[in-house]
Image 1 (cartoon, rainbow, N blue to C red):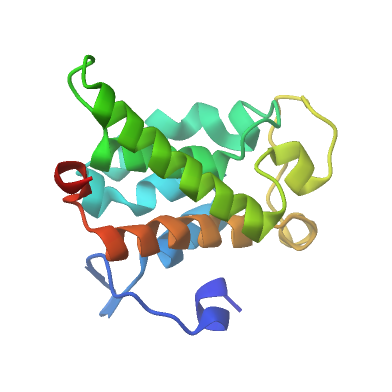
Image 2 (tube, rainbow, N blue to C red):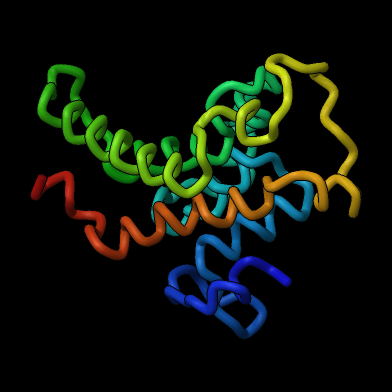
Length: 176
């Protein structure tokens, strides 16, 4: 059963697809189950907010899966969240120190929530694996999905950003 059905929550964000609305969390999970990596899945799910098409988002986030190129460092799903967050609230121009402070504060708050939900932020810790691994991605199969929490983490990470956006809107950069 998809994580969205377990949670019973629907935020009704996103575009109409196949006669039903999908939340960003549902989209992220769908992308992951279709074979995209964790970072791609989360970033692609927020295309309605970032104005980034799926192909560009997939290419942009492709190196961040597996905790940054299977180095098993920061979770790729959280990296995808940060990429989307930057596109939505990012600071500009470079001398905007207050914009940087606001952005970093949001990242730190969401990282704290992520760690509270998952127990860690580092891919190796989440998967209980050693650090850097063979760069060849594992084949996706039923066994892969059963032994890895990644689909749930992708869903929960997208939901984390989705809930943040619902609470704060896209105008926080102006207000914060």
